[in-house]
Image 1 (cartoon, protein in one colour):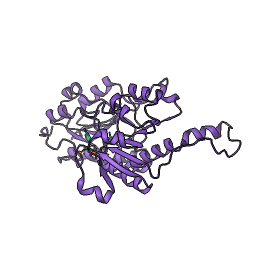
Image 2: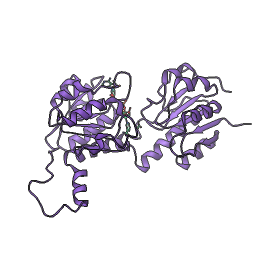
Image 3: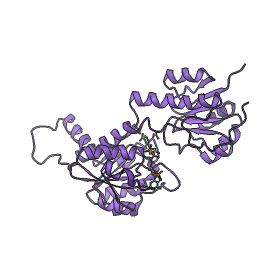
Image 4: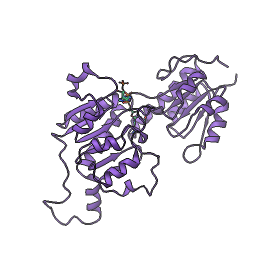
Length: 330
Ligand code: NAP
Ligand code: GLV
């Protein structure tokens, strides 16, 4: 019996490929970086399962031609690269990897906050450049994290994990989210700020943890940046498009806010001539929030399992469109 084809858009952990091979014929894109869109579309036409990354655009046009496809699983919790409405209409399950990367990503958000507050990249560059000649009372002065207020936007899994860390650092934590998490506020030690504006105005650090959706795209624009404290810093580990990056550049250049620390940008990768890369008060990382070996392995295995679930006749364990009416098995 011929096995269903599973297309994998990048070299991933062999353990995940091994799991997929038990249920399907695995074809892996072996080129440098993501497959070009045309290649992705052509390969997906043949596939019953698609193992993709957040760099692969799985849009309505591609899905319309993918008549055999029954599951598209992204190795990420954010699934904004996939047109979920179109997938649902086509009877295609969309899988993702919630939970397994929460703590790792929260660690990185906290690292970014600390890096910006204590000017760690600047201090390292200073030492490496041979400029460390003596202990200096006025050099490389940062801002205190303990006693400062952190504003969290999007109190979901990662938002909560960041709140816990921030409390451990002696910070006050306020938040804005789509839904108030009143029951958990006391345990987490966080305060409901109500509006986004109240978080922006009342925080020394603002950390973004919303998914990228129609509502959150451009959520932090000129108006929002102008509402932040001039001494405040913006931390973004969500998606670059949540922030209007042109407005952020102006905010930093003109001193509406004091700094930013970004793991995600718009576009990705950030172009090498982007002025943000040259600003001393900005930390930029290449989207490494979940990048530890253990976490990436868990993500790859969960993605593979989401596909195997469908190939074996079940709904994926981690699925964002459980309401889908699945295609009949070919
Ligand atoms: P989550 O548990 O779904 O949390 C998202 C939170 O945002 C939820 O509390 C949600 O509210 C809230 N929200 C949604 N729309 C909102 C809006 N319009 N206004 C205010 N709040 C809104 O997701 P997660 O696992 O924490 O992940 C969050 C995002 O982080 C992902 O979608 C992904 O884009 C990003 N991420 C990035 C990295 C990285 O490497 N940098 C790694 C992992 C994740 P409700 O409670 O009402 O649903
Ligand atoms: C990474 O950005 C993810 O959404 O998992």
